[in-house]
Image (tube, rainbow, N blue to C red; front, side):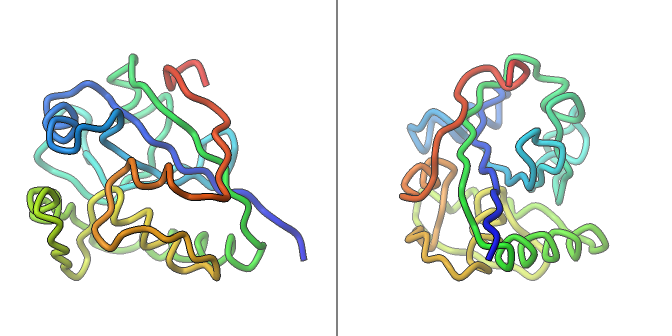
Length: 171
């Protein structure tokens, strides 16, 4: 059985919403994404659909040099590498493909209620960490993540390796 790798990207853009999230969590990073390649070309999350409008969010295909990360060039990031089986990798990849064709929205209420540790689930709505956790839950690995998850929680994944920490553009 071949092993594959996935990447969890934790980030902080410095925007007003990111700063507000960081104020509540008191953690270094306010956003999380998942990537299927080391170059982070296939990076996905829930966030701004338009880099200039923080109020309209949904499923996004992110990139270091496009979208929100392109606009906020001093974004700080931490990249975690995780070994998964080829079967788990394919399961995650297939699930991401199904998101590309749907009508997905941002779970604003879930983020607002996060400080209360209340899980608020809606059909077709996620916030960034909730989405990444959803994908990890498809695997045969128990990542021991809390039900209500924030970006920082991905640091607790025992089988992850930090492969980068710094300015995302310098990755």
